[in-house]
Length: 135
Image (cartoon, rainbow, N blue to C red; front, side, top):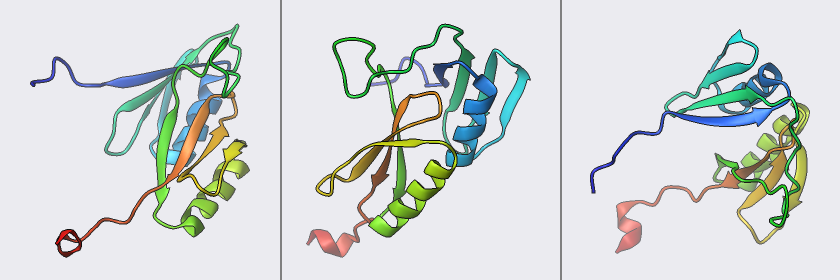
């Protein structure tokens, strides 16, 4: 099926667009375009744009609740194929102001809150398989 449109931007409400754009630039790369303090755009390398929109009455999601003030959307980041790589990424995002919300040994992801309280995940990805592994 042919697409109707191409994803351009994921917009995220927050109380401080510049600060949250800097956080995600440190996590995923790119340079925030912050000419407008109420709408800051971050061009992700090889991906869509993230935009951070001022929401003066913003209330952070209550992860993992779904009955009120749910997360509505979250971002997943590939953090590497080993737990050592995920641990290194975790130390970096915690150093940037993220908070660990959920980590289970049996799961291939960990859930964090960004400085504005939005949930996001660092995921352990399986290493690419060689064609010979399928035979």
